Amino acid sequence: MLWIDKRKCREVALKVEGILPSSVDEFTDPRYYPPEGEDEEQVARYFFFMVAIDHRTHLPGHEYKAVIDGQVHSGADLLYRLGMKRYLENRAFFSPESMANITREDVEEWLNVNEAKIRDPDVRAYLLRDAAVKLIKLYEGQVMELIKASSGYLYSPRGVKEGLIERLKAFRAYEDPVEKKPFLLFKFLERRGIVKVKDKDRAQIPVDNHLTRIAIRLGLVKVDEKLKEVFLWRREATWEEDIIIRLAVRRAYKRLSEERKIDIMILDDFLWSFGRRVCGAEKPRCNECPLSDVCDAFHEESTRMLKEHYYYDTWYY
Image 1: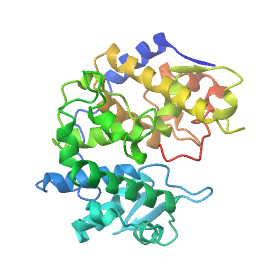
Image 2: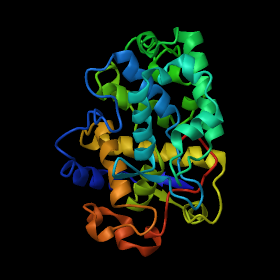
Image 3: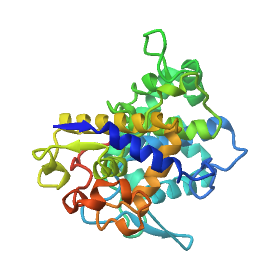
Image 4: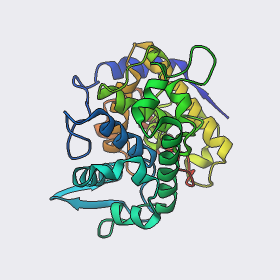
């Protein structure tokens, strides 16, 4: 069905090592994230609730895109831009007491701007309510209590599900078997200095559509002819196929990062930006690609036509 090309992982690792950015995003840009100096619990709540609804934003045939304060934002950028606008207007909006009562109409009022309409506002409202109610019941409404309860581990070393990633799975928004949102939240919180873990070596890359598409086109993960149907959007992947595909992608990037001891979260920064700017689903800019000489898609037109697999109805990523 599909398999990881270990030789390709080694080749791409050598190439990526030389082009990683010298600076690391600390996620303090006030357009999208709480500025430095904010209360830790407030910052943790912002990321906890925003990541809970950080999944596919575009409606079929309509781009989630709008101009805010003279700047064009789309997709996740627009989502977080609107998140920060609301945060600065009313920090209490991101309290669990507020989120526990949020409705579809509230989400639409918050995240719809002119012609930009957020996908599945009812699902996002449900995920926010579920996260808030459980945070109150399990951790006294404090994200910092959730972090404290994890005892500095992503996964409990004692075999009991007490680590941060394991505890997050109690929340519907974070239940993805491939753990995209849990590790995205970890990345934000770690960069802001809110979370420090003893088992960083167990961290995994947050696999989304961009990262899947890049892995398939580069050839890190090879796909047989039958499964190519879902990467050509001729049929939708099944739930089981989706998990198998993204787990293979996750393992391929883990192997790539281990080849040259690249921080998995810094690798994620690079790949996510690369997927948006260069290796887009439509009309990839192959002639501008710094990975072209190790990329299957650059040399094979049939591979260049592949996108991320088609699996639409999910809030996982």
